[in-house]
Image (cartoon, rainbow, N blue to C red):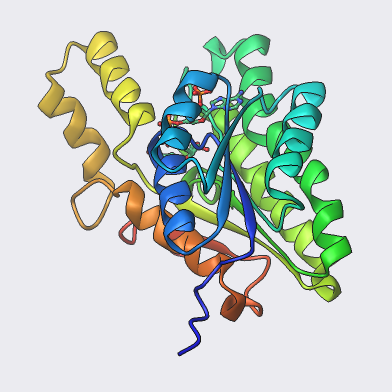
Length: 259
Ligand code: NAP
């Protein structure tokens, strides 16, 4: 029986695919039959995932904010598995600071990794999709792309920008068989969150349990989102059967944000 979730014959590239949400997405794409290139700054981290399934997964190193490195990594990906049909812009960083302590370096870093990185990778992958008249772009934004949160103005601005880019590009390629969507996780159990919990403990003297409670309190389900829950939403958007869903921002956050 044909399965609309089958991604056999597709080449997916997942940025920040070596750990956290990106690794969960890469694993689910592999399980759906796609060939997957995982991209990260440190080759050893992405290579460890590729070594689990060397026939289906290829690792490349690049900083998504560096145009030359992105170009070289996408060329290497094409050389291994052919034209790219699915791009998941997942690489990201979330640093916090009160607004008046947000210096230009922090501001630029948040914009360059989260927003410019998604722009550069999308420019690198889109010509393949236009040529094939089929493509899926999924941007892993955040609930911080849909609502404001204190102490993360730079991150919030970058993720709102990702959603703006998603909406504009979705319209631009709507007649070319390409969909462009965003997935917006709430607080999800990964290294980013471990760092945020450590940051709260260091700055406020709270215990780990108290700091953790701060992150679960905003979720109406009273828990952290799991990486596989985000990956499942990404996989759904990549399916052939999701062809009518474009320009959307799907919140995966237990009801924390409703749009
Ligand atoms: P994570 O475990 O810290 O993973 C981040 C990934 O991004 C790593 O694979 C990292 O790879 C990669 N990365 C960071 N900077 C990069 C750069 N300049 N170039 C290339 N790769 C880079 O975090 P995560 O929670 O899985 O986050 C994944 C995405 O979800 C991010 O966009 C984040 O903003 C978003 N998100 C997370 C949460 C959450 O609570 N966890 C909530 C909402 C949205 P290397 O360090 O190995 O290069």
